[in-house]
Image (cartoon, rainbow over all chains, first blue to last red; front, side, top):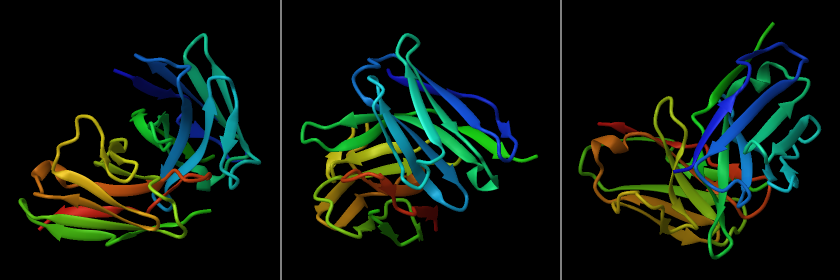
Amino acid sequence: QVQLRESGPGLVKPSETLSLTCTVSGGSFSCCYWSWIRQSAGEGLEWIGRIYASGSTNYNPSLKRRVTMSVDTSKNQFSLKLSSVTAADTAVYYCARVATSTDGTEHFDYWGQGALVTVSS
Amino acid sequence: DIQMTQSPSSLSASVGDRLTITCRASQSISSYLNWYQQKLGKAPKLLIYAASSLQSGVPSRFSGSGSGTDFTLTISSLQVEDFAIYYCQQSYSTPLTFGGGTKVEIK
């Protein structure tokens, strides 16, 4: 059974950098893309981006200027950094596995439990 | 970006009801459409992928249909544990986008 768990500070000051790590257990880390998704009360579910085990990335253009994702295959972990945060970045941040069907379609089949990050001084 | 619009945004239903939720894409996305269920305080759970494929372990009362721009999620006989928020999501192109959600409440 694949499990994902987010970890990181729950409180970040405005203008600073939000940092989260997702640890994957119970499955192959090199099989797939891994994504970050956030959910705030005002904006619903927002895809932040994805990273492959090789390190290749795709970011949401709306956040691209501030987002950096990285991967540590030795620890089965991938990470998110979001710089210059404001109150609008307050959200629950989820990590998720991107599975690919035989017809090439993609979907998020495993999710972490979510990490609430509040941006406040 | 591809916009995903769900309707209705909320509804009230009774146990045993047949339920249909609609999702419309702002452009054709073929069958690159997924459905998720989210309960309060929990992560979304995959129900349907590729428009009509049932995720392993999901009850057969859930089904999906559609292609192009119009899609539906159907629950054939609503159960107590189905009261939740349902989201559609397109994986046709990045940025991947979600619908605004449909909240299913007990009548």
